[in-house]
Image 1 (spheres, rainbow, N blue to C red):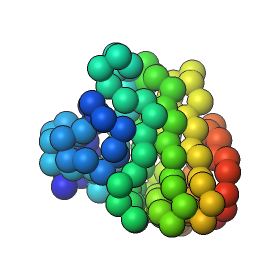
Image 2: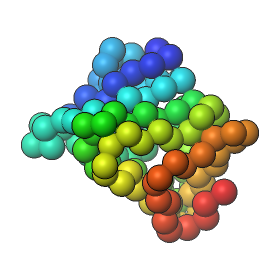
Image 3: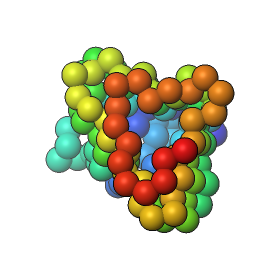
Image 4: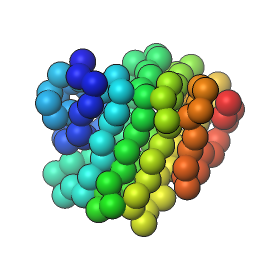
Length: 120
């Protein structure tokens, strides 16, 4: 896995290696989201791994609105700065049932929303 990757997902699976550029999997440090053609690329993302972590999500100024769904029994953790949203669009995180969203240390959600089950 690379430290920084850009989302180019043809499917909605955040954890699928080929949905990232370079195609070596979800980033460990920073995930970058940009303006993409919604007819070719997914903007409603889900997770296939039980547990996923990243340092930060960065949404460039031209980034589309993205929706992320953390299913029941899944966990997503921010280990670094959290979310930086330079776009005019909201970036939504939905947490179902017993799923968890964690912001460790100085991580923040910036100007974004998280709704649903338990948000830690």
